[in-house]
Amino acid sequence: MDQAETLRRLAARKQKQPNAEEGHDIHIMAVTSGKGGVGKSNVTLNTAVALAKRGHNTLILDADMGTANIDILLGIDPRLNLGHVIEGKAGLFEILTKVTDNLYLVPGASGIMDPGYMGIHNLEQLRKDIEQLESMFQYVFIDTAAGVNQMVIQALKGSDRVLLICNDEPTSIVDAYALVKVLYKQDPEAVIQLVVNDVAGEEEAEDVYGKLRAAIQHFLKRDLEYLNHIAHDEVIARGVILQKPFMFTAADSPARGHVETLAEKLESKLKPSHGKGLLQLFQRLIQP
Ligand SMILES: Nc1ncnc2c1ncn2[C@@H]1O[C@H](COP(=O)(O)OP(=O)(O)O)[C@@H](O)[C@H]1O
Ligand SMILES: [Mg+2]
Image (cartoon, rainbow, N blue to C red):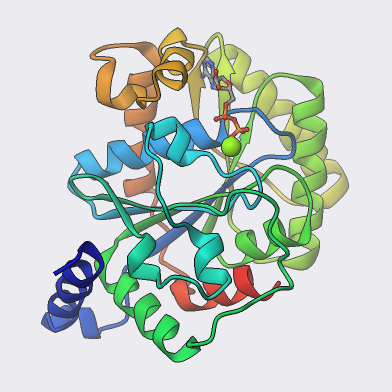
């Protein structure tokens, strides 16, 4: 029995559990930013590790089509990825990759994907696979590309909440504002929460929050919710070079504490799920 078959059986067994029938408590979170290089992938990966360590079945879906790199941050080289599923060359369970206990990855497409192209010949099987996948996980992180493009907006619209990552650079703040503006225009119900990354401390994070919030309040007449900050910390850069997320290695560090707090807040600030689910997310990703 190959890994894909094992996972399918596991999913089938979980689906038969009584409470799996009553809608899903799956919670889909998109991690995004206006500007690239602000720490989306690192925040996604390490926060997912933290939630998995807290006992939650967690999935990362690398939806940064073109420059997907969660696999690189993990030092793994999946043979098949989301691109193969979209092209109809592999099934979803063939690409699903175990990272560690409670944590799985749907590796992202590498190279440029033509989002309009879809070669899936067995949509019915894909739909079944997505439903099975849904029954296996409580938390799903979608790591997106930066900026305002239709694929990103579709991923954000398909999520129960959006974690907006921003650092203290003026360009990052301005681009974050631009993204929020477009998202609210297309999806006024969007739940957007800010994570300020790569700052010296709380004060700097509050300054970034204040600036972004003021612009959103003034021009969009909306508010912005603040989640947490993550310090500038060498363990993150080192983890990237070692290709091992620092949540696996760095015993004690400021960033670790912040990521753990963020994971706790994600648990406790869990808004009632919009119940959007994975099926509609995939539909949006595959047919933007
Ligand atoms: N809190 C942090 N402290 C130190 N370096 C960071 C921090 N967050 C991100 N970095 C650095 O920024 C780089 C880009 O991060 P990444 O997660 O790949 O960004 P994105 O996914 O937004 O493009 C990383 O390689 C890392 O070196
Ligand atoms: Mg990234």
